[in-house]
Image (cartoon, rainbow, N blue to C red; front, side):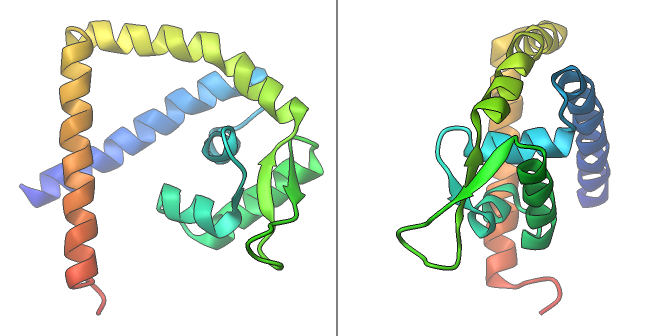
Length: 147
């Protein structure tokens, strides 16, 4: 059962990334850029905070953040809570790119909800995935697989 769940999650990840690439491309973004900008669209965060929230390495986020800054879609700001860990957030151009994705994202979300039989099914899927993620976090904290 665990292997089937993991393989399905891996497949879902690939499917979500494919959809995200298609939604982000017209706005001049990649799925990874959209993901990182999405983490800070409401509030700037240090790169390490983005990495924790997304469950990926700080180095991966740092690489993407630097690319976004180079392209003028984001900027680093001083962090009053930490001298060295600057805050990362979108520029006006980055916010505009994020807004440009909105209509197609909403339309796709509606189509997915319909394909599942309505918002209730999508909400149940989200709840199940959230419980699975929380359980994995707890188990890993109690006894890391490599430790």
